[in-house]
Image (cartoon, rainbow, N blue to C red; front, side):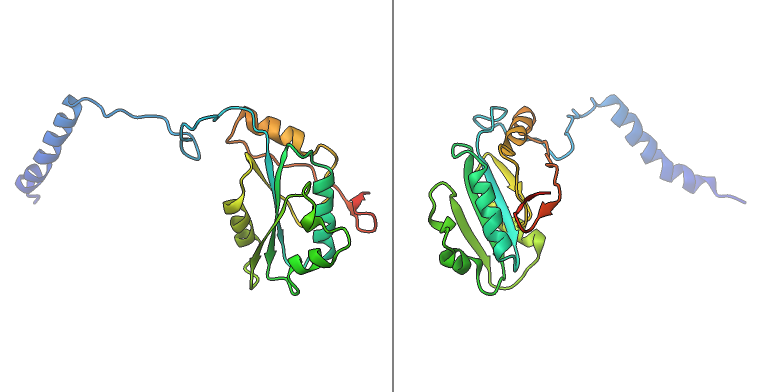
Length: 184
């Protein structure tokens, strides 16, 4: 034997709420794209002109020196906002190696090198976050600390991000000859 009086009492408020909801105007639903909505900032959607190169480096030593030199020499000055070397606990600190290197890339105004340091190794993602938070360019390029770009490597990246600021652009990375620090 089923007691239907209790069932009727429990469902009546639910039916009433459904009919009231149907009579009320539907709330406005707005489309939110994946990743959220970009704030309306001055210049948003305009041409991206500068790039910050973030190099997370842990114990890279000579590779860090060569990578900074290649990005410095192969990125035009007006487009290179800065090269940020995030030293992720290297011993000795990378800034010390740059100070002792005869090229003195750390003092070269064309290279625009800045050093950020983690006293202890925290890992690749933490190093990228540290550099990304400090970057000032229109676009941030996170690059491994053992890469050598082609001349004008930045051109397509800036163009593609100018078209769509939400775009993630991944450059083609080829084999690197460690003797010459250029593509094989």
